[in-house]
Length: 148
Length: 445
Image 1 (cartoon, rainbow over the protein chains, first blue to last red):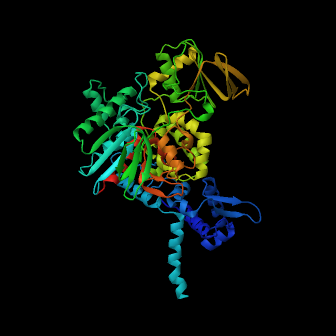
Image 2 (cartoon, rainbow over the protein chains, first blue to last red):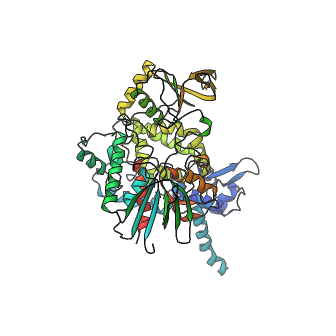
Image 3 (cartoon, each protein chain N blue to C red):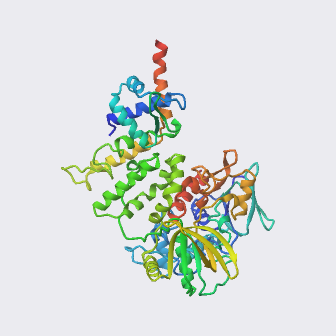
């Protein structure tokens, strides 16, 4: 399931994808603009750095930027790092599998269906890049700006 | 030629044959497939030319069917030949028999469908794109005209330049050897095991030393239960260290619940191409430099009976494996003086050797490789090496990419040549899937 952590992580990455290439963004700015608690964001960015999606620099001028072009970072890849295996239900995962205590997973029709659902989720999220997410965000914002 | 789907396949080894077999599954009557192979026989290539019964397939029979959609095909063929095996145990057939299988399939098909499939013996020396397709020129002066050409030349056959005192086993330079002579084998992977088995079978008595940087030996197969994974379970697109941590954790958990690391390695197998393709260049480079040797011995395993024999030979000292680097080789009277530096002690030792065999693996830079046609395409800017020099630069649709970075609509490649893009593409289970996809793209209505 997409947790708050996954959602915040994606918002932070889209923000970084909007910055000019190579420029470092302050954690405080990312947190404020995207309405993310800063402590939580710190922890999320460390995980994203360990997985190789962002780079950081320490110090007063320090901050974060994408480790590679936004076109090359897939949304599904980020979600797996932050939230673990893509799974609509706890039992519909093969590695982080949590059995339900009230049914037999081998014959559970619900689980069977949910394994298909998660494959469909992976197929969508693994084909969308951060760049597409950023550009789609820009399209959403345009009509609002025209009204203003 | 107009209206026809004509395809010239350069190379009649396993990749070329498997592509042709998948193409011919199409009912299309305007299909024209020509395979050009420089060896006298079709279907054998480098891997399946061996006649030694000890040279077994490293993949069990289900993985070796030539048809992606019919995994039992090879087993049924074996049964028809009186070589049937019980269905519940993995069977590692001799590689020469697999060559017989491919050869029989393709020659039978060429007889049945002479209009649609032609086998030509010869060497392709040039391929030139034309307005409507390609012109393929052979060494004997003949020329073939087609819509598309597919390169399926497979592995390089010559040792890489640093190993110039070394010879490839079975090549013309591999002249008869004194049975008591000391032999050095460069490499400690599955090719080394093949070479050692050939020496054994030829009655070689002299010492055999195998050397590689880390001295790692391949593991044996063992019956297990490959883990069922979906792509949704596997971290993609991360740096290498993140992936390796995930992998180690999964192996630990699998062992704790009574499984084996092989279950994880084999469970990942269907996703190896996707994992490789998802990685940033930095992760690929780190993997090649630091992790690949370790990965290979777990991924590329040997039949258990061969592993037992290897262990015996190591115990009795008939085979010695060293972790060392070859510094220099000098031709001295009666021997090759070979300086090696041991990895652990850093000590330098000089070995006096009668013959050095090159089994350092099959990846090498194509730009100075032994395939004339590949060198010529690169020199003319019609093709280029991939960034890691593992093979040719191709798209995920197998289209060859030229020096300027444009994908060709006429020139394609399959099999080990495409390793830079597909990585896991040396063995039949992967090659047949790749060939199926390309055949479908070519014959789509």
